[in-house]
Length: 230
Image (cartoon, rainbow, N blue to C red; front, side):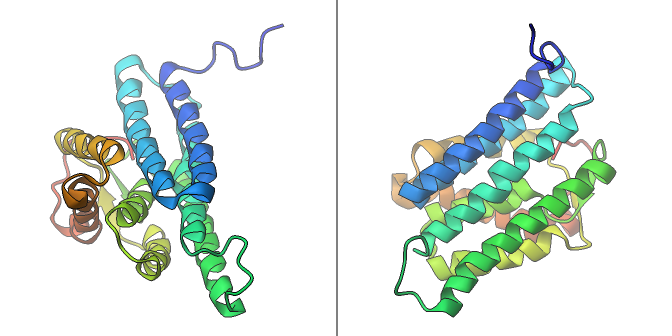
């Protein structure tokens, strides 16, 4: 007896499903070392770009956009949120004041909720468009991961997580990346994953600065022409 979905998923879909599994690995890694989890999240961002490339090369399926959003919930919603919780030392802590514990758990929980809403709206309204409303979940997760690897303090990461939760639902239009820019940043992502501490954390720092610049400036200044899937 063959599995129900045997033969129905394309190559890009398999990359997407792998990315969902990477999200789970990031959650497990966060319980051990938030910096390791941040590197795994960036690996997921690379896979997220690869599945778009494969979909254009080999063709996608009708399931692709739905699987992509589900995988993104795991890798760019739950994984970075849990990493922030682990970064705050909330897990297993009995000495942290209740209001501080509430902040360290509540803000990441809101991040997951807004990521789910944003991805649902993206799948329903923006798939196939060259732009999307609200900051991309991949972008938000990349900022959290690179912020951790670049050495930002826990409170700064928590504050950024709260602001990114708002940005994902903000009525601001973000253009898709040009392919050449996506390839360049993919190389930097790979270097940040492999060598996060090299040259005084230069690779995650560059990636963080670029992602922050895109978050703040691209709605107004980034050219909108050739695009890639978010």
